[in-house]
Amino acid sequence: MVGIGGLVLPVLGWIIGIVMMWQSPAWRRVDKVVATVTPLMLAALVAGAVRVTWLVHDRSEEAEGHAVVVSAYDVAWLGCAVLVVLTAALGLWLFRRIASGARISSA
Image 1 (cartoon, rainbow, N blue to C red):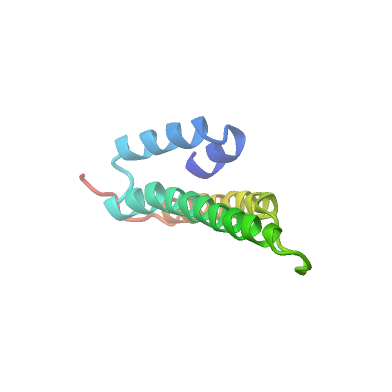
Image 2: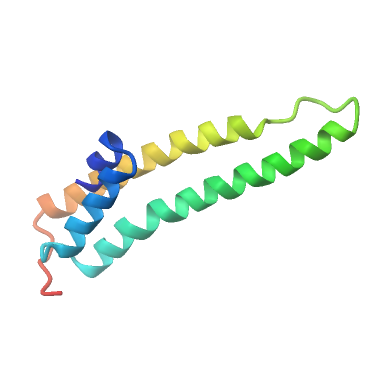
């Protein structure tokens, strides 16, 4: 639900999937933490990369004659695409863990 929900309803689906996962006894605590933290860290990395690119782009416009500089929009779109792919891969990893009969925790 986390990977698929995050693709169908980008933010709300991910939140619903995470809540369902944390309430389920079928997942180990490490699975829950990885599924919760990984997309948040990736989103923070994308936001940081966009910010740095934006600052570099602003400074490069002050100096004339520079070569082509990557736009912050390009970094943002690439970051969103990478975030979607990696979140879907995380969902597949979680699906394989549960389908392979991963240990059921009591927590």
